Image (tube, rainbow, N blue to C red):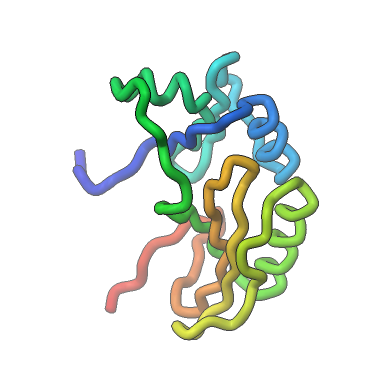
Length: 143
């Protein structure tokens, strides 16, 4: 098995019910494997989990630690600027906080940033140099 992989991304959240509702409002489908204490969403080849902050700190064995936000960016790539704009507008309608409206960027693409209700940062981007698979997944092209 390759060591170069990610199988689960877990976001610590203040209010699990509110975060669960936010991601569902975005159109994400919650897995039947979710439990009262964790919301799970199947994504291409991995899962996203939402877990209460206090419980996450305990699970990590770091009781009393203050977990930070914004040092990691999660990203979704789209096939066009119009798709980025539509997804960005949808996120704001669902309660996201605008950080940077989508715009043309220095690397030749188009992107914007929002924060979910817990401050987790998402980038929505169109990268004309990275074609997407039919299922929306990304396979980096060879140089």
